[in-house]
Image 1 (cartoon, rainbow, N blue to C red):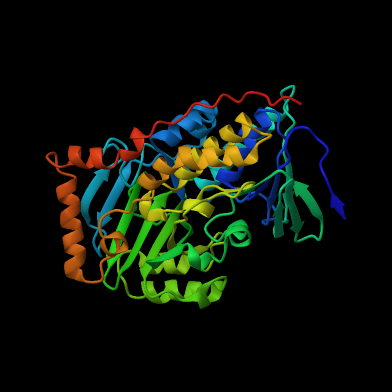
Image 2: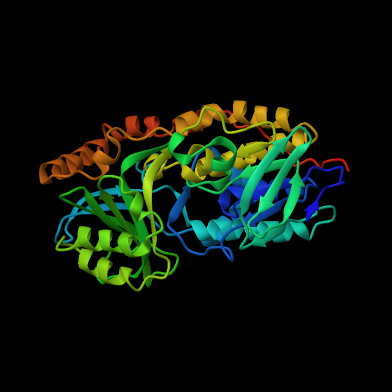
Length: 418
């Protein structure tokens, strides 16, 4: 069955109910546009690793009225510690060391909590007169896209077919929307040399509260523990440098085995982390990869966040790009809802300078983050000490604040005429 819209306001389909997708949906519904959001998960996903707000993304959160909710869920994370195999502190980096732009920012919040803040804001918006709300379809995803002059015909996994004026891919690193509209993932994805996993563990005794603790092992393996919203639990983080292995995709047994073997006999709390992994119900594992594309839009289809311009966790700007990208994309659609090509063209032109800066990786990339040798680990710790010193820290702060130079447009959520 195919249904076609007769509404004067545009029909907008958003694929992905995460931070980027919900941020676009919030701005659109505030402007009188009722988007449809499809999310393949059966419900919103709670928890997740800590993400941060800094620079333009914090401004976006303030303009969107999200800061009260973010403050309620904000993690009490005060910086990062590097430790040796016995847990002895090697170097300490407070959150305010580089003007709040270091590995741990002033505002940290779990990914699930930030998404819930957006969902709460959407629920509040729906109560306002003139706000049409959002249609959510959980357990659904796009199967086929056919773009033509007057719209986009979308076939869903459920078998239904509908037509839309805009389709927005906010479906992450392995975006189905990107594959259907622009081509195979391999054309745009660069493997950065490591896999990353995180999951919830009981907080081990002896861990300093409120501090992210990191431990490096020979072989290019890093293990860490981050404060969680509940102090009785922590988020374990494991990075493993190795050759890309396509067989690991969606094979959680093989993924856990790689983590288990990598941590075996590693010292510090690696045995505790490995044991807790098997009991974790939120185990996450994926490659560290970068998505670079010559363009993120067609005349009616746009990618936002990791789907279009993932910088990988190494960039430290994933949430910033998701929020800023969503804000700009929604703002441009609201400006000319009856001219998709013009709106999406302005989105690309306006956002490109920010993305090009935000996608930049730290010098050395994963090699400097996860050295393979003991000598390399000692050199990495020495470099941290130098960059944290009173003489060098101000220079690092300037280098890490480049995205703050971005001239963020201001988009009032003006209602779209019916």
